[in-house]
Image 1 (cartoon, one colour):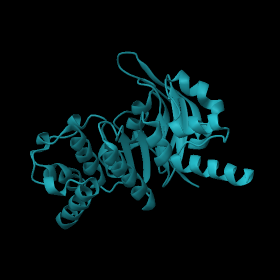
Image 2: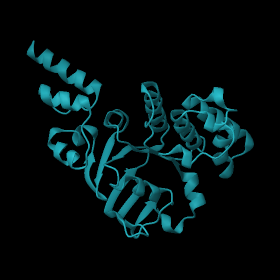
Image 3: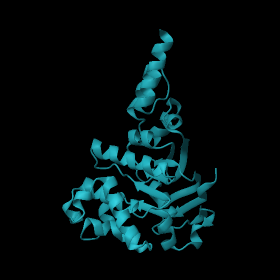
Image 4: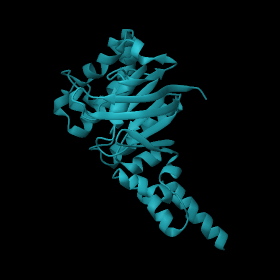
Length: 274
């Protein structure tokens, strides 16, 4: 499968001298759901901000559809890669919810009819159609997070970056974000998520990349990354496997990072024993 994003030996040093990425190599195929995880300061956000041109590599290169992003204007990258920031208040600026969501689509040249359709669909996806005329700062934090997500959805970019999308969400909000990730993948979009919620990661993404000190230390399916033999590496970056994975190991049924996999494994053992 052709990679949509290729990271080739990328290192990045901030102006203050902080070394954030070191010799990172990564390929992300079109239409995949990839989670990038690690402790604060591991390089996750720095890496994904290279995908939409907010940052440029100190050394190495990022290829997007075969084009080196260094030679691509940020405005073009914005039409290809949408980013929902970890802190929605760094993204939100408009006086009404629907104006906030409409800004991105209008800015990349969508026709007015298409903008209106995109805004409605995005607000419906995040459950904010009833607040279309509300001032964003009259919304609670969790709803402002959903508004930031809606602003990205409305742009209909082929690649969607979600930085800690479940932070501040209750169970219903997390389920809504999970459905959005699934729906995006069903339409062939590439979804890249950053999260400290390993249960959300295991249930929403087909591949997990673990970073520590600017390097990738694990890369595989949730079953591989959360398997018992990876626990020490996870602990080195202050991550803990999701509860179903820990229960599965203690029950002797192997790596079961989701509730569904745990139930299936326990059921199969029961059948085998009968």
